[in-house]
Image (cartoon, rainbow, N blue to C red; front, top):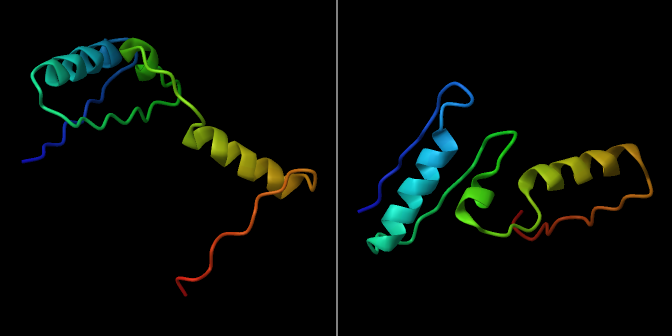
Length: 83
């Protein structure tokens, strides 16, 4: 059975630290898989967990915005077979 846990609150109160500890606990107890989404604009949950990240959604969004404003950036057209 899956569960959803959301953590919100004022900045600097330990939300990321709490989430990192909770994720570590769940993994140690075999309650996997765990999907952790850090929606903070200053996200650093990956650092708390010691996980390397690749390209983020925020970086992709910024790249798309640049492509809209500057012809030097090219975003390939999407696959349109679903229509």
